[in-house]
Structures are given as structure tokens and as C-alpha cells.
Image (cartoon, rainbow over the protein chains, first blue to last red):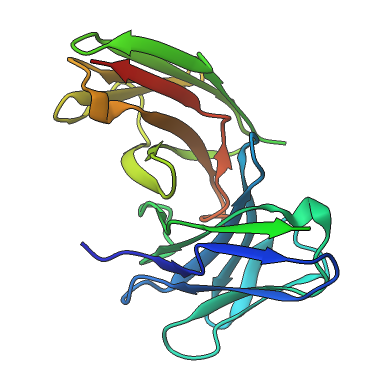
Length: 115
Length: 113
């Protein structure tokens, strides 16, 4: 069964550094998302992306965050200057259509640790 | 603000037991409710419910939605150790926010042999 693939599985970085989290969505999917889960807390929506632009973003997704689809397969989340509170599990997800009838398929996540 | 509350927060049972997990929600514009199973990493999709009273079933798992009382239940019969996981409930809003799911805090299910 096709999967959403995320790399790396674990990233450790120092406060103030830039990080790029990578995702390869399922190949025929058109809609892409980033969610995060701070340890012990709920999974939270960050951003949705379609047709090379952001469709919707949450309050969490401030100017420090950006997303990009640099080629036909990868979907990236960049955090420009990481803070301690950015430490979380970041999940990429994709869906084939944007009709509300298809579930989101999640990747295994990247655990980001900011020291 | 949309809100999803799951109960219980954790549950410990023995193999063969039947469990019922609860999810209640408050949303301004409801489209569907989704259940996911999270075993250490990726939430994996279980069910999507849009209509009240229609049970969705997959093997030993089943789920139903009550849109009047704003809740859903996930039943697991004859539990096995492989059912041990965090079960997540999420609501999907109507309108154009197709991908903006609001999750509950999850129910941690532990099944002992």
C-alpha cells in the first residue's frame, strides 16, 4: 500500500538554526498537509497546500514557517529560526482530492528536538 | 473554536475483552468524524463517519456516529495485544477547510495477554 514518507525520522538542532523537514506524499495525491504533536498534547493542524500555494494555515504557522513543493515529489516544511517550543513530532499528510470525502494519510513523522 | 474530547484517556484490558471508546465534539460546521489508530508513529486511518446511525465495520472494529448528541463511539471486540495503541478521534469541518482536522487528545488502549 502506498505510504507517505518522511525524512529524517529524528532531527536535533540548536535554537536559532533553520531546519527543513521533508515529505514524499503518496504519488497520485494532490493535497498536502503538515500537522504537529507536542509531547503529551493533541495533534494540531499547521498548514494545507494545493497547486503550489497555501490553502489554509493555523495561528501556529507564523512567519518562521514556510512550505514548498520544490519538485514533483517532495513537500517540505522549513522552520527559519527554531525555538525550544518548536520541539514536537511533525506529521506530513496527503489526500487524493479536496472534497472532504477522502481521509488524510499520515507519514511516520519527524521528531524535532530543539536544544 | 472546534473542540473534540475523548474518553477515557486510558484503558487497560485483557485479551478477549470488548472495549468502547468515546468521542464527543463541538464544531460550528460539521462535515465528518474520523478515527485513527496511532502505534508509536503514523496515525493510520480506521473509519470516516458522516451520517448518523450508520455503523461502519472492519473486522473486530466498528464505529457509529450520533450527530444529534454530537458523539461517536469506537468498539473493539475480542481485543488482542496488537490493538494496543492510541486511538485518535478527529472532526473535519464543512466549507473549504477539508484538511483542517481537529483532533482529540486520544485514548491510550493497553491490551494485556
